[in-house]
Length: 331
Image (tube, rainbow, N blue to C red; front, side, top):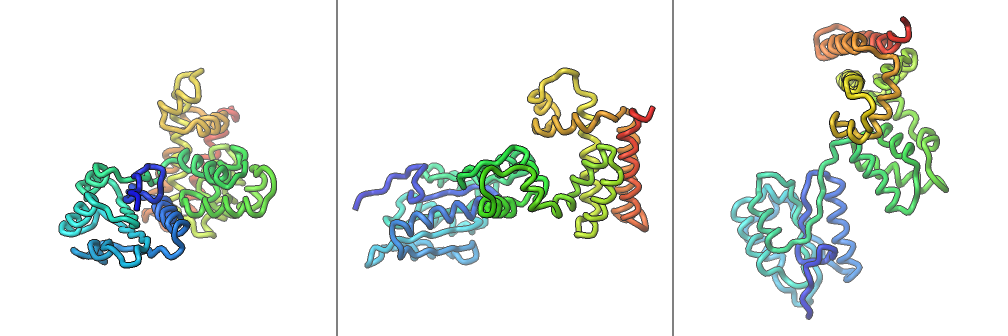
């Protein structure tokens, strides 16, 4: 039987190392290997193990030669949490992986269990990056890639609307993309996303903040009440308000005429947000930013136990921010 090549593009490489903390991507890395194995052999045996199920000697037992040469996938989750003895077993296996067996190691990355991580890389393991998405731009890129993977096109505004509506959970974003692709023909635009996810978008703390910094007090209050009624935590709303006001302050103090790409790098914002904040800051003054930040800070203290009525504290902050947004135009 020919020895398999340990290609970085081959899901059936002897060892796959999935590194990161994004659960959806880790699960997909496993699913890809299992699907490839079962395409090669429908009777592939899959063993999915956590550190407490992998005792010293267990790996050797699972990877021992079979009389029937059956294909097997052995998945080890949270490999950084394995005991020292079990890590020793895994390192020994990496030196001489068994035929017809694919070992998948899921590792969070970082310092814990780094010796195993280094050993797998040194052994030539196929590596799949599964980083946690922490930035809006990364989530937007994920949504775009999901549409491309499903062979469909969506406008940039549609992708942004979906991220704004759904939030940071990649599983929910992936599910939303799948639903839109299944239900809608042709290019998916912002109007379609709004039709499907209006309720969620209105419940978003960022929608409350956007309407407030645009000076649209009535709409901001309506979005606030909707958010609270659907269970959005008040502290998330004060956080979104603070971020929105600070973004306006940062951009207002930036050099005039700078390109969006340069501003994005210097201010730590994605380019799309630079364009949005530019539109929002038209009625703002330096004094208005200071007033709004004080109002948000008071509301934050109120929702964290410093006041008797968190909802009233939020309403006061929203109105104060909306007024500050119109201060320059009111002169």
